[in-house]
Length: 182
Length: 122
View (cartoon, chains in turn red, yellow):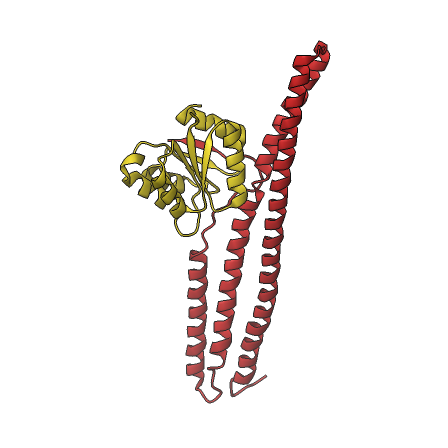
């Protein structure tokens, strides 16, 4: 195909489409992430409240058991069994406390992702705005220069966005973290 | 008399778990939602230990530590960071700011209590 003029109208249309479709999808991504954040927040609130209520009930139950142990003679095997239950409950409570910290970690990751999505939306918005500036009457060199500037602007915008999104959560699982005393 | 610990974290669920663990071990707990709130509460009452997160709105943990260390009453109070951050670079910054220890989330209540007892006693 031999073209003597640049297809600037098509180029503008392409850039506008990339910008519009990209933004539409990112709006959906952002909405899903916000909904996920909300659901996780509500879930942890309910889990936390239930955990506290269960722990309170178990503590009271333990007090009743202790009173019974003092008032009545239990055989050694029964007393040992009760002690084992107590230890098992203690271990599970500790495990639950560790597990219930998931929302702190996930909310930081979600927040970082939402900020990145917003940054991408801004970049695509900028791309769409710039595409309107391409004038079919411009010389080839002017259009080439303009596209080059647009690429540079997007590159800078992307670099700034990444720079402001430092990763603060590297945990890959809910295993307890290291402890350093200075 | 029970020792008092100031727990600073912007996550409500994390504060709840920290407070639960420390109270179960017999400590009194004062809670703060960010570094500025922590600083305000620390000024109201000198506590025995500060346990703070790093990434929080308004004022982060490192800034809180620097501010606390400038107060006469907090020059020797132990301060521990409890954060998702685990890089050596951040730990070095914490140490330079005046932190006495660095705990990476998620924490195990038993180990947390062991560390607290080691730092301030039962």
